Length: 70
Image (cartoon, rainbow, N blue to C red):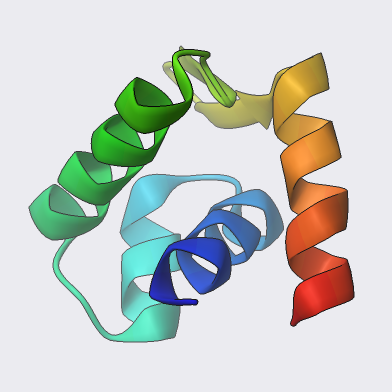
């Protein structure tokens, strides 16, 4: 469930720093958690930009599932 909350926080905040503050973890820990989720699924969930992160189409599907479960 923590992974799903993390994904929703990333989408809501738009970047890892704000999302980490929102859920009370460090930015490096959240970044690692995101990499682990993407690795487990074998697909990228977010595209990283200098200004933040945007959900990929697969990420949007995962976010809808996370919202439904949360």
